[in-house]
Length: 357
Image (cartoon, rainbow, N blue to C red; front, side, top):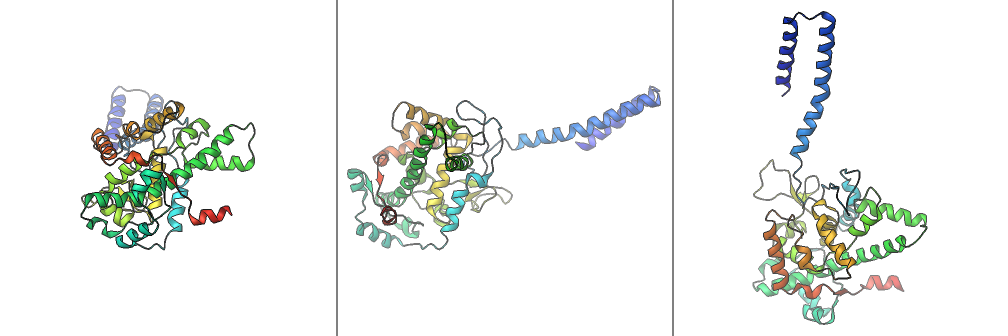
């Protein structure tokens, strides 16, 4: 491109020379052409580069861009700092470095000792706080499909509920702040932190309220099941990746069928809890899920429960298969009666109980 423009510039100068235009006008015209050339080229290059990066996969945890739009926008329309969005996820990863992978039989015994069964959960709506950090390798060896599914749900369910509880606590504090006429310095600092975590540089409370909300348990379970093959995928086993999120700059696992020069990897986590938190942050901040968040806010305003079947319709951008992906999620939710867990409550752990004493 540079070469072609240079040749055109020479031809123009020859044209003026043939017309016998005076020296001063020629200098003026030549200077104008040179200035215009060097001024316009960066704009052209930037435009070309922008066209190349428009495609942004919605699973990309580390590439957030806010779109302008009613109800969930940012006037600056700028790319956000990934360290601000994921600082609590990175810190969770750093804390849990010395993890032990329990085998399937040990985990089953743990469930039996704590009397943790999905049958009881469906009946009482109470979930034992059994927090596992890694999936057992033997989960893929469980021949019974129904038993493997139940085992996977038992492992992932407390993790999803814990993250939803964290959001509930934050949301309650947010509404308390909103209802005050004056806020303390501590509250202002907390708000600044949450603005960064939820990608709201405009510091608009209405946007933060829409983004800071729960993901239906049945929807999260269905996506985890789909993305990991009920806990059997390589990404889940080697990288604790429950939701198949992509990264271009973070630590991750390269898909086996990916080209060497293909940039993305599946994001890797030290513990399962970090994967769940990153997934929720993804749905709550990524521009691809703006409609999902708006529909969730609409259900809230109407006093309706967060229906996973309704909200799943707005996740067609999560996978390349689009609407087919949505149909699969809905099928998983219905066939496995996952809505039974939407109103389940996580019992406090012994550590949490001690902190209350």
